Length: 187
DNA sequence: GTACAGATTGAG
DNA sequence: TCAATCTGTACT
Image (cartoon, rainbow, N blue to C red; front, side, top):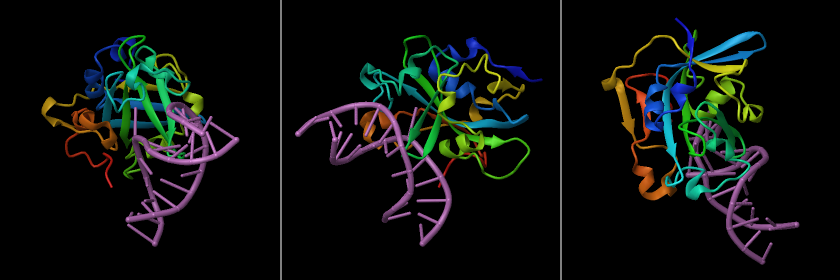
């Protein structure tokens, strides 16, 4: 059973969406093929109070404005001048909240080729042209529910990565991943 | 106009 | 441990 996720999935509390995304599948149509991967690791960013969020303080720039869209749109941006980061807007219009997709388990292969936010975008062939893409309508990328349920006690909740500058917000346990999964990000 | 840090990664 | 490489932001 493959069913595309709709608006009502994304337009909910961000922490629930971040957990709900585990075990869901990203489908990317590319050159007539489908590149697919199961989401195994996510992080929630809840602005404007969250210091680690690009929307901290309620600021709006041409880079971060997609975070303010209602749930179900892509917020993608470049870090370190090299790597793209795939985020999905959550909650409702005007609320700058999103979920960063950090790792995928590729469908049909065993390599850890999408185990990290930068690697995952390379695997899915994503770039700035996906900025603001509507995941509920797009013909080149969307998310599906394949009927897999991740048990509550198989979801690990930890501190987010790479945001030590965010002080007390760096300690928030807003990173979620599937326990014992070989495809989560690590060094 | 210029300087600089950053939600990372893989090589050494 | 470090460099790659570029954009937004905060200055001059």
